[in-house]
Image (cartoon, rainbow, N blue to C red; front, side):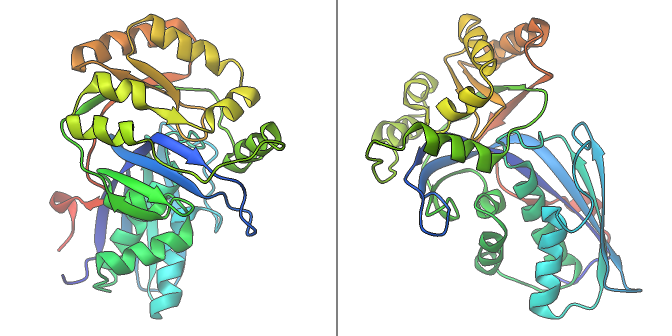
Length: 310
């Protein structure tokens, strides 16, 4: 495809349906075996070409703009700079991110922005990189970034960056209780290590019943197969999240779980009508900052053709 002067890419949030965490590796990362699912909560990243210099700038808007860095610590900025350095790109880019995915909420908000930026800049600068090449660069940026490129439902291994498609039938209905404040992923992993220092930690593995549930398309089967090794650590750091999880179960959720490293709480509903009812109850409970509904799985980062300048 030819280069464009402006590109907008929409990329989804991720949840972990199963997250098994092994002991720390020598490099400090934890090996994981996880099943990701992309859900229909999206950030939009618009990239506009600037040919006066090679600068990369970023502006943030939306529900979760507060606290998102606008310097080189922003993962989207790092994604653009990585492509510049790797392919000797002289042109700069102005990035605008409209955030509807929680920040530090266990839903890969920063990672999905990085994935969207890789896709946008690939088109913007006419690099013509393949999906495999984009996946390689995504893994350099973070553990969740490769999955955010592909979306749908997938197995993540290594530190999560090794992504393989998982067969899944049907559509699942999710409700998310978004907490005030975030949780640091390294802090949650550190708490997990402190909570299990003396017992043998087995290599991570995905539960077979989770894969079977996804293949069946049954929400009831999926409900009993969800798991998250980080949940106990997140609850140790934010005990009040336990009240939110219990509230959801008491008001019709088939299952309740911390999303990734938290603090977002996710709830699996039987169908779209049950999801609406649960969302209303959670919104009225006062237990969370806001509530969102979304279906999954959905595709990963995609260019929005209608607003691509040609």
